[in-house]
Amino acid sequence: MSDGNAEQRPPAERLLDAALVHVPFDGWSEATLAAGARDAGIDIARARALFPQAGVDLAAAFHRRGDAAMAARLRGADLSALRYSERVAEAVKIRLEVAGDREAVRAACALFALPPNAPRGARLIWGTADAIWNALGDGSDDINWYSKRAILSGVYGSAVLYWLGDKSEGDADTRAFIDRRIENVMQFEKVKTRVRANPVLGRLLAVPEAFLGRIKAPSGHRRDDLPGHWNEEAQEGK
Image 1 (cartoon, rainbow, N blue to C red):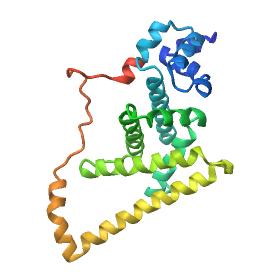
Image 2 (cartoon, rainbow, N blue to C red):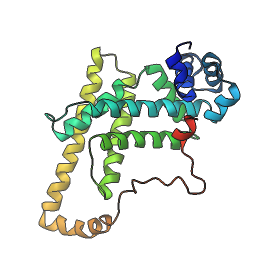
Image 3 (spheres, rainbow, N blue to C red):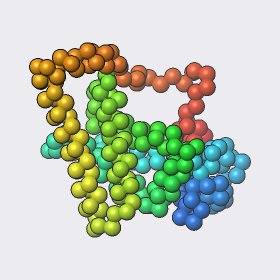
């Protein structure tokens, strides 16, 4: 860590980099936090202030780093020749490409599978789906905002588990799996379209769809001045 540029990076980033070396041996744990702090030259008290939940917070930061790397890749990619469903599939593939060390991801999956951590793991996967749709320019502002992210969360979660066991060259099997899952989603959407077009079934759906149509996407403006608000990204950068 003698590189001047490295020292200028936020402490949380340096600590995460240093901790990653220890994840294959100690998982995402208090021991990994302590070892990373030592290697990064960061006082353990400050390390615990940056990551109060130790391994859980480190694993969450690792996941969000992958989301940011994916979004950056998508901003620089030309997907204009692809169909919309193919763009979504490509985004999921890119997210797995930037995921990094499989063992770090495997350890994070095991950690977030534990009941106390499961809600946070679900929020992280939702965040990935949200990042993908935002990067692709999704403009939905109604119930579709929620359904798109819920469906894609399921696709991404299953793709990660498949990828962790994939031994194929260039993750070819995982890429084919993602294509199949996205195709399944598109078939479901086609069925919904046909149902709406049916004179009888369309009438039956009219009332619930009118109700659901009143549901709006959350505001894009985050409120940081509300009591009890905690901005994880902001805290990690301090």
